[in-house]
Image (cartoon, rainbow, N blue to C red):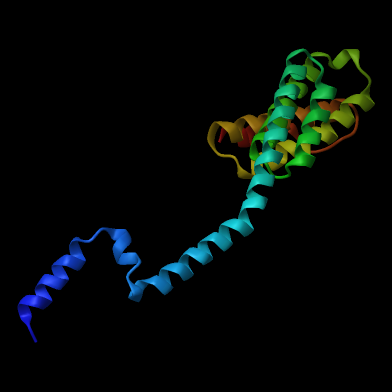
Length: 178
Protein backbone atom coordinates (compact mmCIF):
# COMPACT_ATOMS: atom_id res chain seq x y z
CA UNK A 1 0.00 0.00 0.00
CA UNK A 2 0.13 3.56 0.79
CA UNK A 3 3.51 4.24 2.52
CA UNK A 4 2.58 7.75 3.55
CA UNK A 5 -0.62 6.58 5.28
CA UNK A 6 1.22 3.75 7.05
CA UNK A 7 3.91 6.11 8.38
CA UNK A 8 1.28 8.60 9.55
CA UNK A 9 -0.62 5.82 11.36
CA UNK A 10 2.58 4.55 13.04
CA UNK A 11 3.59 8.06 14.17
CA UNK A 12 0.09 8.59 15.57
CA UNK A 13 0.32 5.29 17.44
CA UNK A 14 3.80 6.05 18.85
CA UNK A 15 2.87 9.53 20.02
CA UNK A 16 -0.38 8.45 21.65
CA UNK A 17 -0.41 8.44 25.48
CA UNK A 18 0.49 5.09 27.09
CA UNK A 19 -3.03 4.51 28.34
CA UNK A 20 -4.45 4.77 24.83
CA UNK A 21 -2.00 2.13 23.64
CA UNK A 22 -3.06 -0.19 26.48
CA UNK A 23 -6.75 0.11 25.67
CA UNK A 24 -6.10 -0.63 22.03
CA UNK A 25 -8.16 -3.74 21.19
CA UNK A 26 -5.01 -5.75 20.52
CA UNK A 27 -3.67 -5.07 24.06
CA UNK A 28 -6.93 -4.90 25.98
CA UNK A 29 -7.28 -8.62 26.84
CA UNK A 30 -3.62 -9.17 27.89
CA UNK A 31 -3.68 -5.97 29.95
CA UNK A 32 -6.88 -7.00 31.69
CA UNK A 33 -5.45 -10.47 32.39
CA UNK A 34 -2.28 -9.01 33.91
CA UNK A 35 -4.30 -6.59 36.03
CA UNK A 36 -6.52 -9.41 37.30
CA UNK A 37 -3.48 -11.52 38.22
CA UNK A 38 -1.90 -8.59 40.05
CA UNK A 39 -5.08 -7.83 41.96
CA UNK A 40 -5.49 -11.51 42.88
CA UNK A 41 -1.89 -11.83 44.12
CA UNK A 42 -2.19 -8.64 46.16
CA UNK A 43 -5.52 -9.77 47.59
CA UNK A 44 -4.07 -13.17 48.58
CA UNK A 45 -0.83 -11.80 50.07
CA UNK A 46 -2.11 -8.70 51.78
CA UNK A 47 -3.72 -10.33 54.85
CA UNK A 48 -0.52 -12.26 55.68
CA UNK A 49 1.57 -9.15 55.22
CA UNK A 50 -0.73 -7.08 57.44
CA UNK A 51 -0.78 -9.80 60.08
CA UNK A 52 3.04 -9.97 60.14
CA UNK A 53 3.25 -6.20 60.45
CA UNK A 54 0.81 -6.22 63.37
CA UNK A 55 2.74 -9.02 65.08
CA UNK A 56 5.98 -7.12 64.63
CA UNK A 57 4.37 -3.95 65.98
CA UNK A 58 3.18 -5.82 69.09
CA UNK A 59 6.59 -7.46 69.49
CA UNK A 60 8.33 -4.09 69.18
CA UNK A 61 6.06 -2.67 71.87
CA UNK A 62 6.93 -5.55 74.21
CA UNK A 63 10.60 -5.11 73.36
CA UNK A 64 10.45 -1.45 74.43
CA UNK A 65 8.74 -2.43 77.69
CA UNK A 66 11.41 -5.06 78.23
CA UNK A 67 14.14 -2.51 77.69
CA UNK A 68 12.63 -0.26 80.36
CA UNK A 69 12.41 -3.19 82.80
CA UNK A 70 16.04 -4.14 82.08
CA UNK A 71 17.20 -0.56 82.63
CA UNK A 72 15.57 -0.62 86.06
CA UNK A 73 17.31 -3.94 86.86
CA UNK A 74 14.20 -6.13 86.59
CA UNK A 75 15.82 -8.70 84.29
CA UNK A 76 13.38 -11.50 85.06
CA UNK A 77 10.32 -9.58 83.90
CA UNK A 78 12.26 -8.07 81.00
CA UNK A 79 13.10 -11.61 79.88
CA UNK A 80 9.47 -12.70 80.19
CA UNK A 81 8.38 -9.79 78.00
CA UNK A 82 10.92 -10.77 75.34
CA UNK A 83 9.78 -14.40 75.47
CA UNK A 84 6.21 -13.18 74.95
CA UNK A 85 7.35 -11.02 72.03
CA UNK A 86 9.17 -14.01 70.55
CA UNK A 87 5.97 -16.05 70.85
CA UNK A 88 3.94 -13.35 69.10
CA UNK A 89 6.47 -12.80 66.29
CA UNK A 90 8.76 -15.84 66.09
CA UNK A 91 11.94 -15.25 64.16
CA UNK A 92 11.68 -11.45 64.36
CA UNK A 93 15.32 -10.34 64.35
CA UNK A 94 14.80 -7.28 66.57
CA UNK A 95 13.41 -9.44 69.37
CA UNK A 96 16.19 -12.00 69.02
CA UNK A 97 18.84 -9.27 69.19
CA UNK A 98 17.11 -7.75 72.23
CA UNK A 99 17.23 -11.17 73.91
CA UNK A 100 20.94 -11.40 73.17
CA UNK A 101 21.59 -7.91 74.59
CA UNK A 102 19.58 -8.71 77.71
CA UNK A 103 21.33 -12.05 78.16
CA UNK A 104 24.74 -10.34 78.03
CA UNK A 105 23.66 -7.60 80.42
CA UNK A 106 22.10 -10.08 82.83
CA UNK A 107 25.19 -12.28 82.82
CA UNK A 108 27.44 -9.28 83.50
CA UNK A 109 25.24 -8.33 86.43
CA UNK A 110 25.15 -11.91 87.68
CA UNK A 111 28.93 -12.03 87.74
CA UNK A 112 29.09 -8.92 89.91
CA UNK A 113 26.57 -10.43 92.32
CA UNK A 114 28.04 -13.93 92.20
CA UNK A 115 28.89 -14.26 95.87
CA UNK A 116 25.46 -13.03 96.99
CA UNK A 117 23.43 -15.75 95.25
CA UNK A 118 23.11 -19.48 95.38
CA UNK A 119 24.64 -21.87 92.88
CA UNK A 120 21.35 -23.12 91.47
CA UNK A 121 20.43 -19.56 90.46
CA UNK A 122 23.58 -19.25 88.36
CA UNK A 123 23.15 -22.66 86.83
CA UNK A 124 19.55 -21.86 85.80
CA UNK A 125 20.58 -18.45 84.52
CA UNK A 126 23.38 -19.87 82.39
CA UNK A 127 21.16 -22.66 81.08
CA UNK A 128 18.62 -20.04 79.99
CA UNK A 129 21.12 -17.57 78.48
CA UNK A 130 23.56 -19.86 76.63
CA UNK A 131 21.11 -21.04 73.93
CA UNK A 132 20.22 -17.42 73.13
CA UNK A 133 23.88 -16.39 72.93
CA UNK A 134 24.70 -19.45 70.86
CA UNK A 135 21.86 -18.72 68.44
CA UNK A 136 23.14 -15.19 68.01
CA UNK A 137 26.75 -16.31 67.56
CA UNK A 138 25.77 -18.70 64.78
CA UNK A 139 24.88 -15.81 62.48
CA UNK A 140 27.07 -13.03 63.85
CA UNK A 141 30.27 -11.57 62.48
CA UNK A 142 32.96 -9.20 63.64
CA UNK A 143 32.61 -7.32 66.90
CA UNK A 144 29.15 -8.71 67.63
CA UNK A 145 30.42 -12.29 67.31
CA UNK A 146 33.38 -11.53 69.59
CA UNK A 147 31.03 -9.99 72.15
CA UNK A 148 28.67 -12.98 72.11
CA UNK A 149 31.53 -15.48 72.37
CA UNK A 150 33.10 -13.60 75.28
CA UNK A 151 29.77 -13.64 77.12
CA UNK A 152 29.39 -17.35 76.39
CA UNK A 153 32.80 -17.82 78.03
CA UNK A 154 31.66 -15.77 81.01
CA UNK A 155 28.52 -17.91 81.27
CA UNK A 156 30.61 -21.09 81.24
CA UNK A 157 32.81 -19.60 83.94
CA UNK A 158 29.76 -18.89 86.10
CA UNK A 159 28.47 -22.40 85.48
CA UNK A 160 31.85 -23.81 86.45
CA UNK A 161 31.93 -21.71 89.63
CA UNK A 162 28.43 -22.97 90.47
CA UNK A 163 29.83 -26.49 90.38
CA UNK A 164 27.82 -27.63 87.36
CA UNK A 165 30.79 -28.23 85.09
CA UNK A 166 30.63 -27.45 81.43
CA UNK A 167 32.95 -26.33 78.68
CA UNK A 168 36.17 -24.47 79.27
CA UNK A 169 35.56 -20.70 79.30
CA UNK A 170 38.99 -20.05 77.80
CA UNK A 171 38.00 -21.60 74.47
CA UNK A 172 35.28 -18.98 74.03
CA UNK A 173 37.66 -16.19 74.99
CA UNK A 174 40.23 -17.40 72.45
CA UNK A 175 37.58 -17.58 69.73
CA UNK A 176 36.36 -14.09 70.56
CA UNK A 177 39.85 -12.69 70.09
CA UNK A 178 40.38 -14.32 66.70
